[in-house]
Image (cartoon, rainbow, N blue to C red; front, side):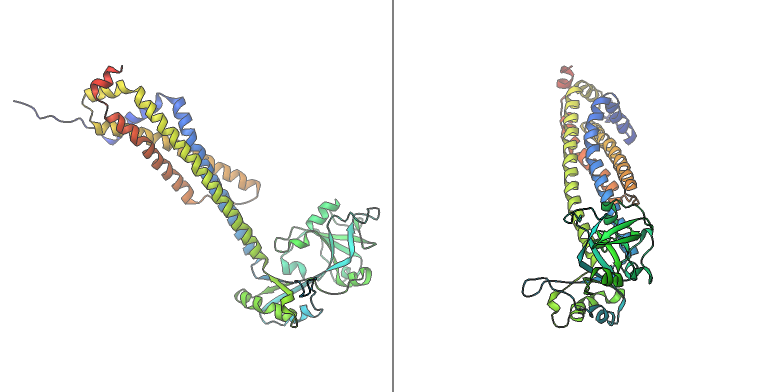
Length: 400
């Protein structure tokens, strides 16, 4: 009486245990192979996390600052020279129904900014003197870093508020009666310093004085250089279309209308393009790591031919041999993937903390990263696993 041949069976956990043995017996090789995968996943996770955190911070800032700020400035005249806005442009703009706030600044062309009266005239540091409305901070969303903004009294006297960049270049760290700057041949007391203004960066490098003081002390001609308007959110596009014709009905083509939040969004788009490049580099690093895994598994098969022959002679099927080495490759890649996601998350958290952002790790980065490692592990281990399963037992045992 003959007994039917029953092929040996391995449960999934047995296959996993056999695959893990191969990793435990070669720790240094496993570490180096997993490192290649980890570097690629770290790069991809960190780039995605930092980009998403930056975008979330920008969205939060825009939500706080508002996207309904429009600016009106003179463009170029038909003759090719610089145009100017009419004196009544701010009043005309304020009559547009959906416009909620209007504030004006005007560059005082006859005045430069100096720390004291002994600085050579040519060394103004690129700073400008601008006459400003009292409503400017609330219109553009500016905040005071120190001191106070101009008021009904100080706008008539030689008092100035410095932008963040201007204060830094002049070496002035605080406001007070003993802090003075030399504007247009006169001393002005620094009564305040602004924080950086994201939606009006031109104010950062300016010394701002009241319009009456600019006219009385510095010979300001009263022409507005920039008109800032806050508009109802639902009417931003409509107001933008009529601002040029309202500000200068005779020559609307000489008026430039912009939306500062668009510039921030454009900068974010540039950052996203750069992020795409970095993700591509991360993918290349991940591919290199996959090649390292494949190389490790091929060498492992060559080194373990005796083991393969012994298992085959004891009844292991080709499918079980394939499964063993494929699982070993997947485990090796998974180790690198988990390490990469962990390191990428840590890098994102630390970098976001240095920039005072909330760390945001997109789910697709972590899930996709782990999925990519398993896919690469499967591809990298497929050929070595097939090669191992096709080794004849006699040939494999003879190799020992």
